[in-house]
Length: 460
Image (cartoon, rainbow, N blue to C red; front, side, top):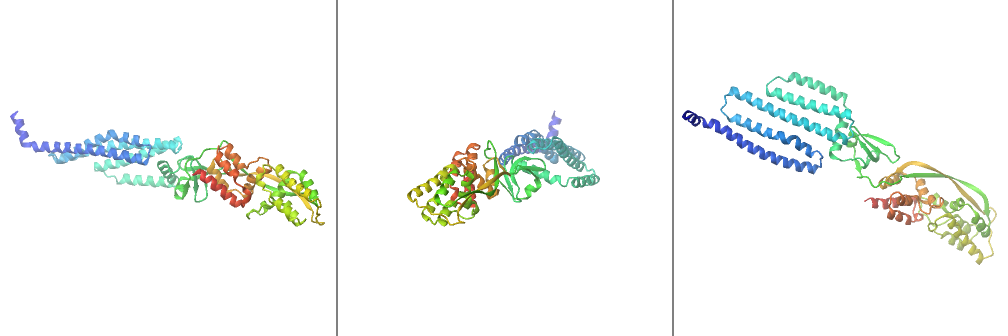
């Protein structure tokens, strides 16, 4: 017993100092471990990554072993162990640390692939390939470090790896940038399925899918545009954000063309004008009340119609001409009501002035009508954002059809836009605003701008 005590008295520093270093380092390592977990958790939550729990779980247990190994390495470095034993012990501890870190990295790589794979809609077989590639890369790096720890030459292995990497880069030179861009899109959530995006190169539409190499968007004409992920990140794009409320039925834009047809009917005085107009088809009434508006859509239109122009020019009756020109077409829900109003004005005037003037030969009023052919165009809108973007692109003929012709010629009483907004989108207030908008006081381009302005205000 006295011999043991005397040995401790002679060698206490050789035993106590390494133990003290081990304990102090271990305490410091556990404190740093706690601080690192807190900081990592805050950062991951700030970045809004859904992998927070997986990352913490992958390193929480092994990090205890890392603290012990690092503390043991420092204790071994200050101990009095003979030099011929220090090197193998130090390498053995480093090997244990490397194995533990490698296992954690393999678990993290597996978790990331399983988490982001479904989000990026990567096929199952591709997920297996990606996971195996990640494993190989981690294991190769770990083996290289292990060989370096035990002082084994690694130059031949490095050359072999370099050749393999070069061959792989050449084989997958197009796929790799798209794969990396796909991971970036998934990690940052810059674009999500359902977002409406618009590229500076002109492509636009609703994102329907983000795969490992391509992003799919459905354009306004319902075609699918496939954009490589790397190209998507190389160009500027506008993300209008989450999808708006979907309509029960999509709005399908139409346009029309028409031919002017002579009816063979004509009038040389007001009596003949009133009698013929009273029995004329709606197509005749529409043509003579809207011809000027359609042919001069680039001008701010004045309220006029062919009847008012003929009465003033051919009959020289400016008073009646002004009364006919002052009829506000927007007040009438259909062409029948408009016809009755025009006829009643003429009849009242005839009753006050029975002496009818007649037009000179060759200046009679010839009744004409338009034969309209309606046809669908490519643009389709499923929500208000798509509707606005389509409205920017459709022809003036399409705009004219949905605002003017559908309201009067088709006897709907309201324009097509208002009907769709109310019935399919439930946008009663916006529909009423557009219904109250008098289209006869705008040019067609001015009307388009006003409609877009009203709808964009609702979107915001």
